[in-house]
Image 1 (spheres, rainbow, N blue to C red):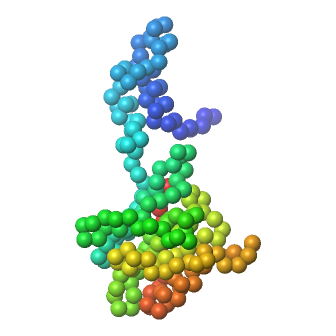
Image 2: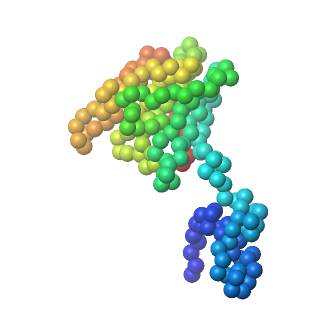
Length: 186
């Protein structure tokens, strides 16, 4: 029984180039170069600058939030970039100071009882998350952070939980129901 294996694009390009190389001692001993590689194989291997960033966006009335997975050297995303696009201007939104060890992992839109729009950003850990890290932050439609989690954790050792007190209090005051969060794909 055979098993399927993932073949990295560069290895595939080299394999295809080797298959198209002339047979015989000269063709089998020499490593294929880019000039001998088929055009389709060379195109299948994007350069680091061509690699597409993975991410998501959440469009709410008046603005759009963009959450982008930042490339990692080992291939596993651990950090993200959060940006807001409003009135044709795109700018970065810094993570809350108390979330310096965490990163944005999900987005949602919310509306208060008067119809004003807000963004909900969930912070946590990538790529696998953790047992107690689900912090929610409320931002206005201009990207201004409205809540904090200071300190980030409540409790001790095994009884730790995320501090979402300020978030919970503000959404209750505004008449917002906690929305369903969409998560970034890695």
